[in-house]
Amino acid sequence: MTDFAAKTVVITGASSGIGEALAKAVDGRGVAGLGLLARRTDRLEELAGTLRAQAVVLTADVTDRDQVKAAAERFAARMGAPDVLFINAGVGQLLTGSRVDASLVRHVMEVNFLGAVHVLEAFLPAMVERGGHVVVTSSVASRRGLPGFAAYSASKAALDRYVEGLRVQLSGRGVRFTTIEPGFIKTPLTKKNRFWMPFLLEADDAAHRIVKAVERDRRRLTFPAPMAALVKVLGLLPDGIYDRVMRRTLPAKKRTLPAKKKRRW
Picture 1 (cartoon, rainbow, N blue to C red):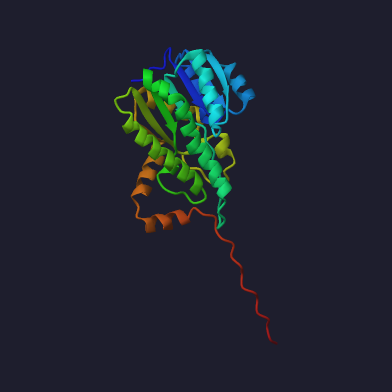
Picture 2 (tube, rainbow, N blue to C red):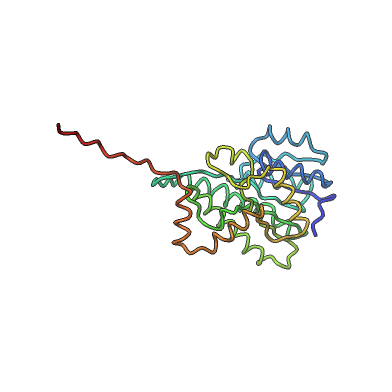
Protein backbone atom coordinates (compact mmCIF):
# COMPACT_ATOMS: atom_id res chain seq x y z
CA MET A 1 0.00 0.00 0.00
CA THR A 2 1.09 3.59 -0.68
CA ASP A 3 1.35 5.70 2.46
CA PHE A 4 1.54 9.45 1.79
CA ALA A 5 2.99 10.32 5.19
CA ALA A 6 6.45 11.91 4.88
CA LYS A 7 6.46 11.31 1.11
CA THR A 8 7.21 13.77 -1.70
CA VAL A 9 4.53 14.32 -4.34
CA VAL A 10 4.37 16.10 -7.70
CA ILE A 11 1.02 17.13 -9.18
CA THR A 12 0.57 18.48 -12.70
CA GLY A 13 -2.44 20.63 -13.48
CA ALA A 14 -2.27 21.75 -9.85
CA SER A 15 -3.59 25.30 -10.33
CA SER A 16 -7.29 24.33 -10.39
CA GLY A 17 -9.86 21.56 -10.49
CA ILE A 18 -8.88 18.02 -9.55
CA GLY A 19 -5.18 18.93 -9.36
CA GLU A 20 -5.77 21.63 -6.75
CA ALA A 21 -8.09 19.33 -4.80
CA LEU A 22 -5.46 16.57 -4.88
CA ALA A 23 -2.84 18.93 -3.46
CA LYS A 24 -5.09 19.72 -0.52
CA ALA A 25 -6.04 16.07 -0.03
CA VAL A 26 -2.48 14.73 0.12
CA ASP A 27 -1.40 17.69 2.25
CA GLY A 28 -3.91 16.40 4.79
CA ARG A 29 -2.16 13.02 4.68
CA GLY A 30 1.07 14.52 6.04
CA VAL A 31 3.27 14.60 2.96
CA ALA A 32 6.75 16.01 3.40
CA GLY A 33 6.86 18.02 0.19
CA LEU A 34 4.77 18.96 -2.81
CA GLY A 35 5.70 19.98 -6.33
CA LEU A 36 2.89 22.03 -7.87
CA LEU A 37 3.19 22.14 -11.65
CA ALA A 38 1.02 24.26 -13.97
CA ARG A 39 1.23 27.35 -16.19
CA ARG A 40 -0.23 29.94 -13.78
CA THR A 41 2.39 30.97 -11.24
CA ASP A 42 0.01 33.20 -9.27
CA ARG A 43 -2.51 30.40 -8.71
CA LEU A 44 0.23 27.97 -7.70
CA GLU A 45 1.74 30.43 -5.22
CA GLU A 46 -1.69 31.12 -3.76
CA LEU A 47 -2.28 27.37 -3.32
CA ALA A 48 1.20 26.81 -1.85
CA GLY A 49 0.46 29.41 0.80
CA THR A 50 -2.50 27.39 2.08
CA LEU A 51 -0.60 24.11 2.48
CA ARG A 52 1.16 22.80 5.57
CA ALA A 53 3.77 20.82 3.62
CA GLN A 54 6.75 22.46 1.99
CA ALA A 55 5.65 23.29 -1.56
CA VAL A 56 7.72 24.01 -4.67
CA VAL A 57 6.05 26.05 -7.41
CA LEU A 58 6.94 24.55 -10.80
CA THR A 59 5.72 26.88 -13.52
CA ALA A 60 5.63 24.97 -16.80
CA ASP A 61 3.44 24.18 -19.78
CA VAL A 62 3.23 20.40 -20.18
CA THR A 63 3.23 20.79 -23.98
CA ASP A 64 6.73 22.27 -23.76
CA ARG A 65 9.20 19.42 -23.29
CA ASP A 66 12.05 21.69 -22.18
CA GLN A 67 9.92 23.50 -19.60
CA VAL A 68 8.81 20.21 -18.07
CA LYS A 69 12.38 18.91 -17.97
CA ALA A 70 13.53 22.12 -16.24
CA ALA A 71 10.68 21.81 -13.72
CA ALA A 72 11.71 18.23 -12.91
CA GLU A 73 15.29 19.36 -12.38
CA ARG A 74 14.15 22.14 -10.02
CA PHE A 75 12.11 19.68 -7.99
CA ALA A 76 14.94 17.14 -7.88
CA ALA A 77 17.35 19.81 -6.63
CA ARG A 78 15.01 20.57 -3.73
CA MET A 79 13.46 17.22 -2.88
CA GLY A 80 14.94 14.47 -5.02
CA ALA A 81 12.76 12.08 -7.01
CA PRO A 82 9.03 12.18 -6.17
CA ASP A 83 7.52 9.22 -4.36
CA VAL A 84 4.17 9.86 -6.03
CA LEU A 85 3.57 11.56 -9.39
CA PHE A 86 0.05 12.70 -10.31
CA ILE A 87 -0.29 13.36 -14.05
CA ASN A 88 -3.43 15.42 -14.15
CA ALA A 89 -3.17 18.33 -16.62
CA GLY A 90 -5.79 18.17 -19.34
CA VAL A 91 -8.11 20.05 -21.68
CA GLY A 92 -11.37 19.24 -23.41
CA GLN A 93 -12.95 20.83 -26.48
CA LEU A 94 -16.47 20.41 -27.84
CA LEU A 95 -16.73 20.27 -31.62
CA THR A 96 -20.03 19.30 -33.20
CA GLY A 97 -21.34 19.21 -36.75
CA SER A 98 -19.38 18.16 -39.83
CA ARG A 99 -16.35 20.42 -39.34
CA VAL A 100 -12.97 18.78 -38.60
CA ASP A 101 -10.49 21.14 -36.94
CA ALA A 102 -6.98 19.70 -37.07
CA SER A 103 -5.53 22.52 -34.93
CA LEU A 104 -8.01 21.77 -32.15
CA VAL A 105 -7.28 18.03 -32.30
CA ARG A 106 -3.55 18.73 -32.22
CA HIS A 107 -3.92 20.95 -29.15
CA VAL A 108 -5.96 18.37 -27.24
CA MET A 109 -3.50 15.60 -28.11
CA GLU A 110 -0.51 17.76 -27.19
CA VAL A 111 -1.90 18.53 -23.73
CA ASN A 112 -3.66 15.30 -22.78
CA PHE A 113 -1.33 12.75 -24.35
CA LEU A 114 2.04 14.26 -25.27
CA GLY A 115 1.94 16.47 -22.17
CA ALA A 116 1.72 13.31 -20.05
CA VAL A 117 4.57 11.75 -22.03
CA HIS A 118 6.73 14.83 -21.38
CA VAL A 119 6.05 14.54 -17.65
CA LEU A 120 6.86 10.83 -17.63
CA GLU A 121 10.05 11.44 -19.61
CA ALA A 122 11.20 14.04 -17.10
CA PHE A 123 10.29 12.34 -13.81
CA LEU A 124 10.07 8.58 -14.39
CA PRO A 125 13.78 7.63 -14.74
CA ALA A 126 14.60 8.80 -11.21
CA MET A 127 11.48 7.10 -9.87
CA VAL A 128 12.53 3.80 -11.45
CA GLU A 129 15.84 4.02 -9.61
CA ARG A 130 14.25 4.45 -6.18
CA GLY A 131 10.65 3.24 -6.67
CA GLY A 132 7.43 5.21 -6.67
CA HIS A 133 3.82 5.48 -7.76
CA VAL A 134 2.52 7.12 -10.95
CA VAL A 135 -1.13 8.17 -11.02
CA VAL A 136 -2.58 9.16 -14.38
CA THR A 137 -5.92 10.94 -14.76
CA SER A 138 -7.68 9.56 -17.81
CA SER A 139 -11.46 9.63 -18.29
CA VAL A 140 -14.47 7.41 -18.86
CA ALA A 141 -14.39 9.01 -22.33
CA SER A 142 -11.39 6.80 -23.13
CA ARG A 143 -13.62 3.74 -23.39
CA ARG A 144 -15.60 4.81 -26.49
CA GLY A 145 -15.68 7.76 -28.87
CA LEU A 146 -18.05 10.43 -27.58
CA PRO A 147 -19.89 12.59 -30.13
CA GLY A 148 -18.70 16.17 -29.84
CA PHE A 149 -15.65 15.07 -27.87
CA ALA A 150 -13.98 12.80 -30.43
CA ALA A 151 -10.58 14.47 -29.94
CA TYR A 152 -10.84 14.27 -26.15
CA SER A 153 -11.84 10.59 -26.30
CA ALA A 154 -8.96 9.84 -28.66
CA SER A 155 -6.41 11.62 -26.45
CA LYS A 156 -7.51 9.75 -23.34
CA ALA A 157 -7.63 6.41 -25.16
CA ALA A 158 -4.06 6.98 -26.37
CA LEU A 159 -3.00 7.85 -22.81
CA ASP A 160 -4.67 4.71 -21.43
CA ARG A 161 -2.94 2.39 -23.87
CA TYR A 162 0.44 4.07 -23.38
CA VAL A 163 0.25 3.82 -19.59
CA GLU A 164 -1.02 0.25 -19.81
CA GLY A 165 2.02 -0.70 -21.86
CA LEU A 166 4.39 1.05 -19.45
CA ARG A 167 2.74 -0.61 -16.46
CA VAL A 168 3.53 -4.06 -17.83
CA GLN A 169 6.92 -3.01 -19.22
CA LEU A 170 8.06 -1.71 -15.82
CA SER A 171 6.49 -4.40 -13.65
CA GLY A 172 9.03 -5.58 -11.11
CA ARG A 173 11.01 -2.34 -11.43
CA GLY A 174 9.56 -0.73 -8.30
CA VAL A 175 7.14 1.67 -10.03
CA ARG A 176 3.40 1.17 -9.61
CA PHE A 177 0.75 2.71 -11.88
CA THR A 178 -2.83 3.73 -11.20
CA THR A 179 -5.14 4.89 -13.98
CA ILE A 180 -8.02 7.11 -12.90
CA GLU A 181 -11.17 7.26 -15.04
CA PRO A 182 -13.52 9.85 -13.55
CA GLY A 183 -16.92 10.76 -14.89
CA PHE A 184 -18.12 14.35 -14.76
CA ILE A 185 -16.32 16.43 -12.11
CA LYS A 186 -17.21 20.02 -11.27
CA THR A 187 -14.09 21.87 -12.49
CA PRO A 188 -13.29 24.86 -14.74
CA LEU A 189 -13.04 22.29 -17.56
CA THR A 190 -16.67 21.18 -17.20
CA LYS A 191 -18.06 24.56 -16.15
CA LYS A 192 -18.42 25.61 -19.78
CA ASN A 193 -20.47 22.52 -20.69
CA ARG A 194 -24.04 23.38 -21.65
CA PHE A 195 -25.44 19.87 -21.51
CA TRP A 196 -26.64 17.60 -18.74
CA MET A 197 -23.78 15.91 -16.86
CA PRO A 198 -25.06 12.86 -14.99
CA PHE A 199 -23.60 11.90 -11.59
CA LEU A 200 -21.65 15.18 -11.36
CA LEU A 201 -19.18 15.19 -8.43
CA GLU A 202 -17.34 17.94 -6.59
CA ALA A 203 -13.57 18.08 -7.13
CA ASP A 204 -12.88 17.48 -3.42
CA ASP A 205 -14.97 14.30 -3.53
CA ALA A 206 -13.09 13.12 -6.60
CA ALA A 207 -9.71 13.83 -4.98
CA HIS A 208 -10.68 11.85 -1.89
CA ARG A 209 -11.62 8.83 -4.01
CA ILE A 210 -8.41 9.07 -6.02
CA VAL A 211 -6.20 9.26 -2.93
CA LYS A 212 -7.96 6.22 -1.45
CA ALA A 213 -7.37 4.27 -4.67
CA VAL A 214 -3.67 5.17 -4.62
CA GLU A 215 -3.34 4.17 -0.97
CA ARG A 216 -4.84 0.78 -1.87
CA ASP A 217 -2.53 0.38 -4.90
CA ARG A 218 -5.42 -0.07 -7.30
CA ARG A 219 -4.42 -0.38 -10.95
CA ARG A 220 -7.58 1.36 -12.15
CA LEU A 221 -10.41 3.37 -10.64
CA THR A 222 -13.54 4.28 -12.60
CA PHE A 223 -16.04 6.41 -10.68
CA PRO A 224 -18.67 7.21 -9.61
CA ALA A 225 -20.19 3.70 -9.51
CA PRO A 226 -23.27 4.51 -11.66
CA MET A 227 -21.04 6.03 -14.34
CA ALA A 228 -18.69 3.03 -14.17
CA ALA A 229 -21.67 0.71 -14.73
CA LEU A 230 -22.94 2.83 -17.63
CA VAL A 231 -19.52 2.88 -19.28
CA LYS A 232 -19.26 -0.89 -18.93
CA VAL A 233 -22.60 -1.35 -20.65
CA LEU A 234 -21.69 1.07 -23.46
CA GLY A 235 -18.46 -0.82 -23.97
CA LEU A 236 -20.35 -4.04 -24.59
CA LEU A 237 -22.80 -2.60 -27.12
CA PRO A 238 -22.34 -3.51 -30.78
CA ASP A 239 -21.36 -0.51 -32.91
CA GLY A 240 -24.77 -0.19 -34.56
CA ILE A 241 -26.67 -0.06 -31.27
CA TYR A 242 -24.04 2.24 -29.72
CA ASP A 243 -24.42 4.66 -32.64
CA ARG A 244 -28.21 4.78 -32.28
CA VAL A 245 -28.01 5.32 -28.52
CA MET A 246 -25.39 8.07 -28.71
CA ARG A 247 -27.17 9.90 -31.54
CA ARG A 248 -29.89 10.67 -29.01
CA THR A 249 -27.40 12.74 -27.03
CA LEU A 250 -26.80 15.09 -29.96
CA PRO A 251 -28.74 18.37 -30.17
CA ALA A 252 -31.82 18.09 -32.34
CA LYS A 253 -31.42 19.41 -35.86
CA LYS A 254 -33.49 22.39 -36.80
CA ARG A 255 -36.32 21.41 -39.03
CA THR A 256 -37.57 23.65 -41.82
CA LEU A 257 -41.35 23.77 -42.00
CA PRO A 258 -42.84 23.38 -45.47
CA ALA A 259 -44.06 26.59 -47.04
CA LYS A 260 -47.81 27.16 -46.85
CA LYS A 261 -49.64 26.64 -50.08
CA LYS A 262 -51.64 29.54 -51.41
CA ARG A 263 -55.35 28.96 -51.33
CA ARG A 264 -57.34 29.34 -54.50
CA TRP A 265 -60.64 31.04 -54.05
